[in-house]
Length: 135
Image (cartoon, rainbow, N blue to C red; front, side):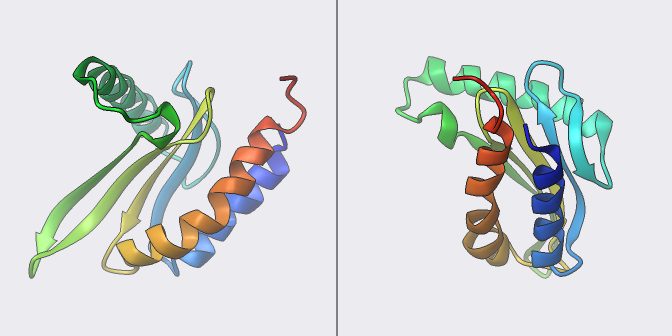
């Protein structure tokens, strides 16, 4: 794993969201512990790791044809003038890691996150997690 690159890419997420990133962590699926983050939220990592495990199990039991690498969770919290205020996102990165983030949608937008920021960083982030790992 190239931890320096992981940290750099998380900083790109923060810069890309223009002040909207409240917290962001890359965390272990096995332990739920953060390996890198910005304004890390250790309890959130541990708890949302459990939520994702149960969600993944429910998807498999449901028979829905969703590959593991596409499973992610986005929860919008609070509403002001019909607009969500906070987004909680948990994204599958690879077989060992997930990324969790809280985004203040009063300072950034869901469109910016999904259409610009995540496409720019997810590929390099996944690659930096596997660099140095034997296949």
